[in-house]
Length: 76
Image 1 (cartoon, rainbow, N blue to C red):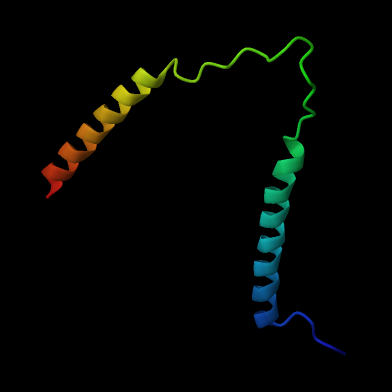
Image 2: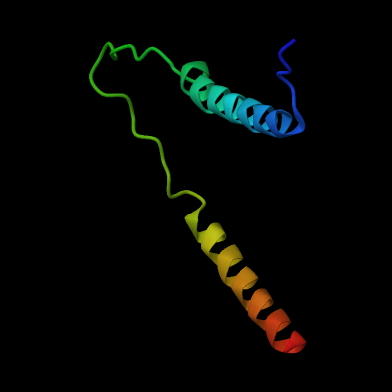
């Protein structure tokens, strides 16, 4: 009788299974979110605004940086 599942082999199988799951999740991500791009009927579609909330994000980032620096200065 051939023993396939030794303790050392079980650890390798667990790592291999984790690798398979990670590979499956990463590769299935491309196919799940793939969309067929249909050409527009009348010219280009309107551009999507990306700068609408940039000021609020910048203010939040500055506030977070100030909070982090003050917290770090108190602990040292």
